[in-house]
Image 1: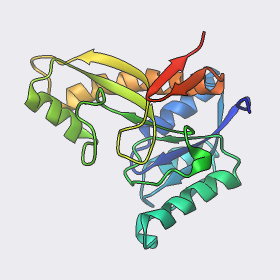
Image 2: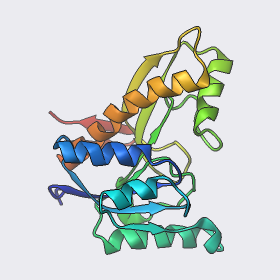
Image 3: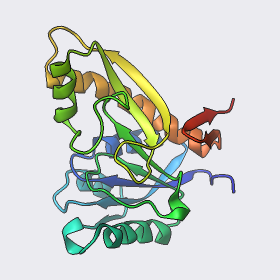
Image 4: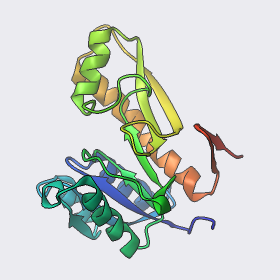
Length: 209
């Protein structure tokens, strides 16, 4: 089935909600053909919940600690998405692992603040990523938008935007430069999905014109 227009999405958060705020702003500006049906937070104190409330978007808190197993937690997350007829789930700083059910295969996206497969996997999030980039001495970093599978930061890559690593960078300054690219790359990936222009073949994501 072709995606709906505007695309009904859920945004999954655990903290500051900067990706959510970016989506809200892009949708309001008319540059992102999506509608946020639901915000799911794994943290009841997440700042992003305030952005959802201010925009009049329904939000639900689903905490990992309330469930005995990852499978049960995952069931709760995706049951909420199904209830709101979400066609794409977008992770934006969502720090809990979930199992992707069959009906959401290639329907969950994530953004990672490095160029996968470098500096990614369990434990690589937030400033930890940028600290690792600087400690390694890498000259280039960036962000990656990818489909989510059953492993951390492993699913097929949709888009990557690169930034230089400067000699005087701190983790914070590098994070800011990478985040500026995240604000462009993630909406672009969602737009391509909404337009039905993404095809996955093995590990390759092809973009039709």
